[in-house]
Length: 292
Image 1 (cartoon, rainbow, N blue to C red):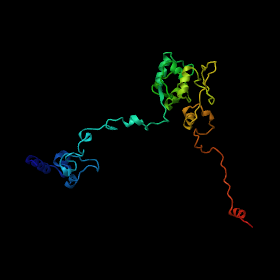
Image 2: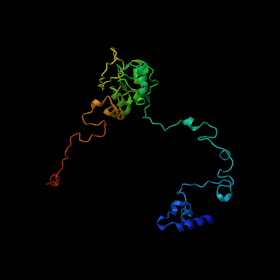
Image 3: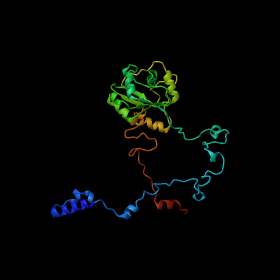
Image 4: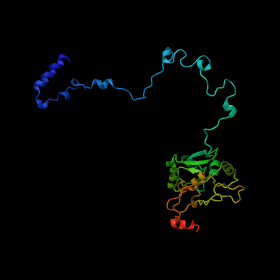
């Protein structure tokens, strides 16, 4: 400690009463934080948090000397080899094709946001007084290149002002809530890629099928002529359960009884009759097994 600071501290302790001595608060630099040397020398990172770099070409004792772990000669030692390289002949991916890493049961839905529908209504390209189906959306060029269906999303829901009545493949919960808050309705129904093409060409009804009981609060624009091909209904369990769910506003929700769930496999608790299992006494079963 410098001599001037030592004298200052001695004078402070001499002229300051014992009850009012607050040297550590006035001169914190005189009392630095102290720690044990054993703690400082034992500081280390978490286990496996640091991996030592491999030093290659540093002699045979390191295990990575001379050839640095690449071996002798050849393309693998002199450079890099692309994945699946067979020496120049036709790659296996070309000969046998690529298999796997593809979900065969996935569907490709065309996203459609509420702000775009409201913009089309404001421009007069969609009529909110009639049901809005895939046919109206395709004819007005609101959507294009539809493969498996259309999913309604809620982006721009704050711009929605018109009460719309939409029939689509799927819809998010936020989009359903926004449309119903504006006085409209949402109905989800099943479509196939082939049926979507026929709907756009006017060969199939875009709303009704054999199992549907869809009733819309606005006037339906149904043509008087009969459609040559009817609209199909779902056959797989996954699709049937989706369109039976009232939360999705499915068009098959009328098939559910009160309190029944949409699942075809799991039974709803409390629904169904409990059949008592008949148990036979040991004496009765022994009597039947008697020979004499």
